[in-house]
Length: 151
Image (cartoon, rainbow, N blue to C red; front, side, top):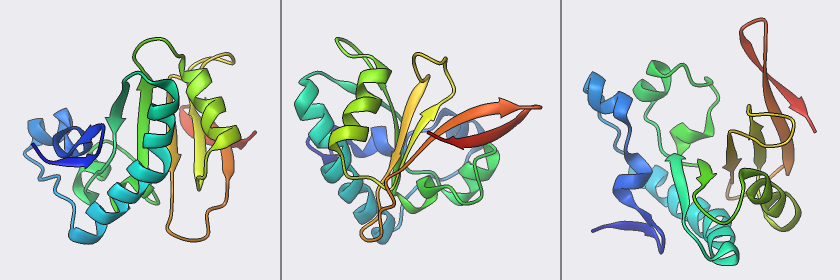
């Protein structure tokens, strides 16, 4: 089995039910794969090691075709292999994961994705090799459209 990092398999990082259903190839280039490894090592693994319990990866790499099919942002860092979405599995909440990354992590963008005022539905975090902005946002729906608020 091929791994992106100690706790993320290649299959987990590239799997998409939408891609399978629509016959979309979701295969990263060498550069995108290297970006995925960097995100996994720099952002995901420190959180996973701190928590000491599994964290579910819900989205990592998305090809341009897949990103378009799901209605992803045209500037999504997922298509570059620079972003990962995750949810808790046991022992920690999405809020705790969000706060851990916010206060201890190195990141480009950290997004509280939907959910409630008390808990994000999932946590989105991106990382770039240089120029990380440490931007913290919250996604909300306004008139049916996703808006990002600085928090």
